[in-house]
Length: 216
Image (cartoon, rainbow, N blue to C red):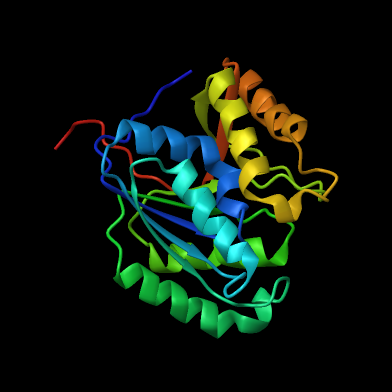
């Protein structure tokens, strides 16, 4: 399988519609980036949960998933499940967020997600981050909308298990959901690992990229 590198990474932008989206979609990738790039700046924007216990969960979770990194988190208070009705506010928030970031990589939801909040965010992110590598993470949930990914980040079993443990520890508000358990999370990473000849992996959807072959 062809391997691609991203080079030096000093700042990343991560965006989610709800508290826990980012950690579910790319928690192990966050752990890897933070450990591989000391002093990494993580700029995070979440659309809903502001002013609630969910925002507190998100703050503690991102600190755990980004050890040693400088995490700057903004959690808005949009109502869950109503993102399309707040298109203007989301667009303005993304514009303000973009103006205050200089990321080497951008991570967000992916366009094929069946949840309207995730899908709208995925559609708007490239309108602000027009010249960036934007990777769309997948969010495990009850909808049968699992994407066909094009980019894989290989993980060890230990890292996949660490991600699952941190999710269960830092998002107790989600413990009642029948899909929110260690088996579900490691099951998906194991499946993605099979698809890239690894024990485990997190996978991403890439809509557009420019490749440099070293010519003039």
